[in-house]
Length: 106
Image 1: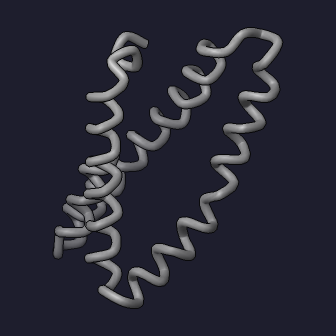
Image 2 (image 1 turned 180 degrees about the vertical axis):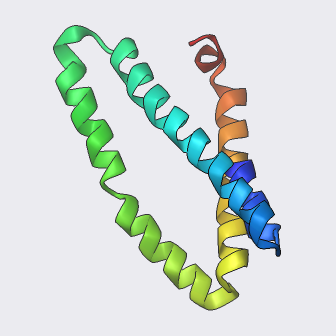
């Protein structure tokens, strides 16, 4: 998802940028399904409600990220802000995958 978003931030033409957004949308849909599935399978039945509540709380903080992206876009421009966010997201995923080998088995 981060790589598609990074590609979107770098593409000047409409059609390739649109295709990058389509790819990002597909990846985001898959991520959303996996996010809930991993949360539900990693937690015991008695804690599933709390875990899904924590997941909903984390998803609910998206407006704060949008606010920060708006500030960053004002400072450096929208394409640079989107590209920086995507690059940091990809880096975070790589670091997480490297540090948590158990996630690769799920």
